[in-house]
Length: 173
Image (cartoon, helix red, strand yellow):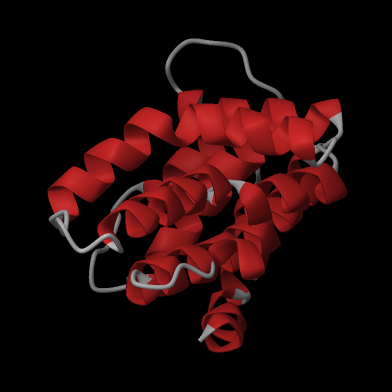
């Protein structure tokens, strides 16, 4: 949780942490159902927004000089720019297993035609479901069907996964 503690940007950091918890939980479940490593996918899911948290921390440190406060759009743009570099540095500094690093680097590329592993796909779809769980006011029609098709899950497996959404929402709040 300390990685996601960002003085001066507490609200954004808390949202990243909640999303990371939910994604880690869901990615492990999805990997278990889809033939990937639940441990690798769960850890990658937990860390999938770590680069964003580190970028946010850098922004907050810059803002603490008192000379500027970036608006939400500028924060998002800066985080997107530096997230890959921060994620790679975190992987090296923490000596993360190659499978975890591959999932961290691949989850955003699912669907772009590039080949990524089962764990990256689990993080990608875990992130999508986590967003649906945490931000139910922004529904994602067709998400369940896309997950079912992409991961070749049957409806019973998907129903079991979705049955855990309510307890998950309560756990990360």
